[in-house]
Amino acid sequence: MISVQEQDFNIGLEHENLRVRAGDPGAIVTFSGLVREIYDTSESASDVVSGLFLEHYPGMTERCLEDIVKQAAKRWPLLAARIIHRVGELGPKEQIVFVGTASAHRHAAFESAMFIMDYLKSQAPFWKKQKSEDGSQWIVSRASDAAAIKKWDLGS
Image (tube, rainbow, N blue to C red; front, side, top):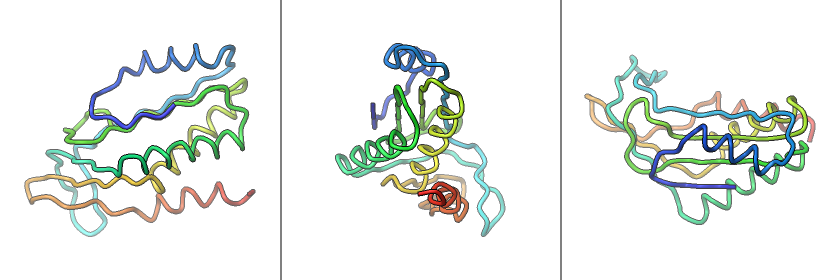
């Protein structure tokens, strides 16, 4: 199940919904990402973030997220999966993303959640504009994000 939304989410409720949808899982793994208050750029000193604005391409973004979940389901025996990604104006320490996976076994739940998050971070069409005292700037993809998905391509 995929959601791209402006409103916040309740991690406990999302976990419980995964548990119910999965039926009889042996493991549920969840990840929630937050807007960092300090964003360390490689080009300059750390920057104190006052806000983050996220844009997406409606329809295309959801299809991309659904494809990421389908790819994960081909690799691991998932009983349920959930992605929530927020868009719009967010402040420091606010929740920005939720990824949850359920499977009969912990390894599949952990690995599939990492896979989904790695691909979400590097492949999903979201654009982030960071605001700070020094103004605002679009955040560019990091080399570490691209490197993270390479490990998943080794066995395919």
